[in-house]
Amino acid sequence: MNARHERAGHSNGQGLDGQRPAEDPAEGRAARFGQLPERIAPEQMVEESPSDPPNDPQFGRNPDNDWLIRYCA
Image (cartoon, rainbow, N blue to C red; front, side):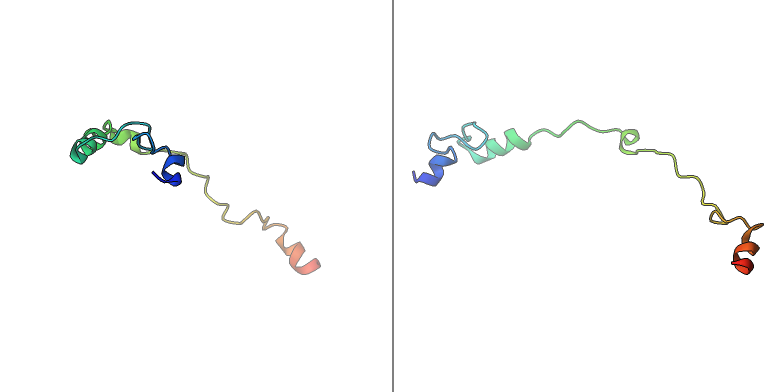
């Protein structure tokens, strides 16, 4: 084996995860991908959060004092 394989831990015949590779590649795939993860209910897939309050239609201005800013400033 070359030095790169020895540094990566391949010199002892083990894979990167520390387990020996299966003799048959199909067995290795079946062991790794043979089971599906647990099913998730649709209720758990949606996150609900309260929405922001609606925007102020006057954007914080006071229409009673607006004339003062327009004509006296």
